[in-house]
Image (cartoon, rainbow, N blue to C red; front, side, top):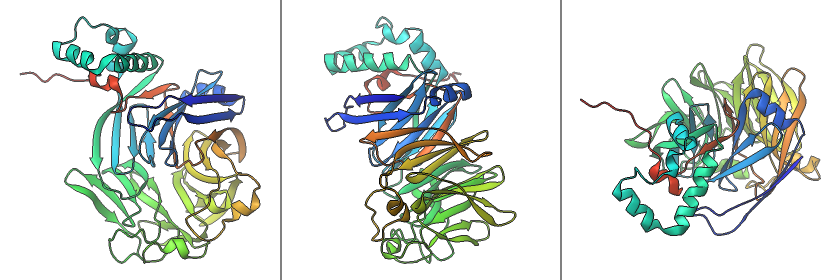
Length: 392
């Protein structure tokens, strides 16, 4: 099945049509519907976060503009996104969504004079845009509103995850794992044993992180070097999987590894340069290839026995060497693949074409098949209020 979509330019986005189309396996809409999930996807190359949504019959791809979106994590109540210089936190508001569905946003009668003046000021174009946004929200079964933003500077955020001590981010620029604070750009919490100092030099391209029991446990790097952009000129095949607790190098011959995840007592990760998804058993310290995919795998999430893996087209890399997957494929693909962990077979997929060719991360959004998100550059955000009372 196929979907063809051209996105209207959003406010503050370059005024050009966004060219996008997709083709997906016929079972994918029913699968997402049966699981009661949708998939959030980030594409830093396209400056888009988007949701793969379904009515059970078709897939709808719903785009939101953000500058260089990277790591994303989501559940039914929260979505958190790492962008170019900020981490953004969104919360689902049942109250606001119900108000929209009940038509309360359609009435001008109870609006304050200031808001009415604001609507007159923004003019007919903005009113029309607001009405389109509200109508779109009415189709949602979850609505995420912006609740917090922390500015980090360009620390080249990669993977992010909520743990027992708040949000953990992979800070590739400074080659460390960090937590965030309103008092600082970041709080450095761990660095690989071979990194001698915290400097903005992206020394080993630390990129992936897996949490276990609420704390970082495994990370991936492109190599074990300690100098500026070392991974750009080094040979391939020096990538690592590292145990954060012990600093032990568990695997050290990977090619551009990404997206380690701890699930069902195994570590799954993408050996992206070879197109392989690997399964590492911490108990036996053995590794096997789960599956080889037709592209550059990056981004991974799970529900039940299913693994969702992002796939990017092989591009001209920042490094000098040609990655093996580029030599093995005449044409690589971009999209999301669904893998059965038990049978190690492909359950379904969706393939993207047009202006989306690179995926960084994916997140399973549970208990929502048609989520939406109100970004700060939308007109309607001015009038979406979610509050509680603590009046004396």
